[in-house]
Length: 269
Image (cartoon, rainbow, N blue to C red; front, top):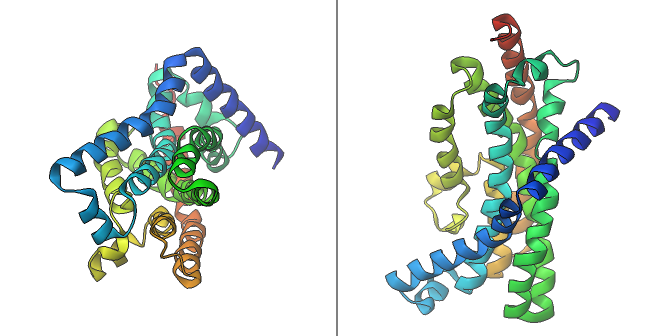
């Protein structure tokens, strides 16, 4: 545990130094969900009307799309941090030091997304909570807090799969951005942040259910649409946690395989 906390502290210093050094990154992190939500609303108004959206989905389009943008940003930051870090370390020349470190590779990659959780909380306070409060008052504020909490669970449950797939690909083909550019969009589509998963066909629903964060996304969407019956919320949330625990084993195997491959390869100069 002490080693893991040291890793978290190091990652926080790295991320926060970068964020506060580049003020534009912090500003864009806060503004990005507003831009994305505005774009999706504009696209929806061109294609149809809010009444049609409410009739088909059962939720205010502003709340639904704002929630989708926030969840997308929260999970995307985790996936990007974990899956792109080996490429970053390779180009920065720090990969040999990471691999030869006595710290567990699994703990190292589990610590990488932690600083982003706090940034997600900042984003929830500056974007999601104000939107929910303006649209629904005090009840909306409570709903916003629940959405932020479930979104953090979604990000946490994404870590084992992201590490397993990312390091698995790197151990097969080296630190290349090409494979990640193929896998990453597939993950985002399967999560279904911009469409209700319960409206999918049974086959598509079962396939996307294998992705832990997609089940958390369904919980968030049901809360926004007010379909949050106890069983309809607890079952997907429990499934997400169980799948994440099951995926810890392939995460550990992929990390170990990648580490051994890098040690055999030796230091590049």
